[in-house]
Image (cartoon, rainbow, N blue to C red; front, side, top):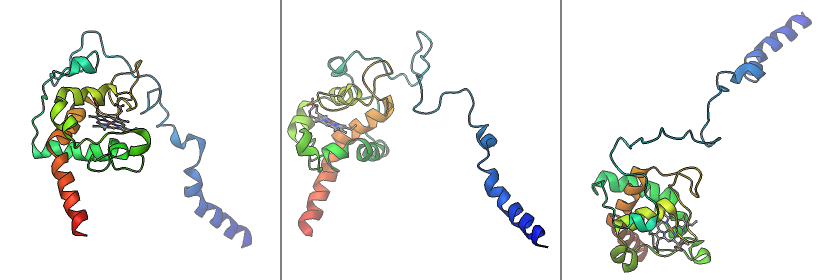
Length: 181
Ligand code: HEC
């Protein structure tokens, strides 16, 4: 009787234990490259982007005259806003006013002033995101060079659309809310 209940208890524990067997992850451990692991396989020589947006730009200077190929639709701006909050807000502030806790410490500039809004071209902003700046990290550029490739070409243009066509409105709304409180 006692032995039986021990076996029953052991059987009950089996499904949980089975999850931890060494072979439980066999299907996952295949000879492939996992996200954020190893080197990216280089694209075949002379490949071109399907969307027709150039991905090979030498540096920020070369990106300066580039035209934004993605229209600043509400959808694109919304996507840019989401990405901005994830990738840029930590340093530049939630609405780009340079008011995040670390902004002052690293010298992250406000993006809602006329220097960025009027002087910098959309191509230059895209280039800044792609190649980084002096302190600012790079979100594009393929393996082998400095950069993370965290944002793909289109995503970077969505962020540009937000910086140039959505950020000021968000900043004004945030200021109004703060004043009303
Ligand atoms: C780790 C902090 C950090 C993050 C994250 C960051 N930036 Fe910056 N950014 C800076 C700093 C610091 C400067 C000013 C010094 C410099 O140019 O490096 C700057 C400068 C800029 C400039 C002005 C470039 C110029 O020519 O003067 C733009 C535009 C900009 N950032 C946009 C962005 C966008 C868009 C993102 C998100 C994709 C982002 N930044 C993420 C720190 C950051």
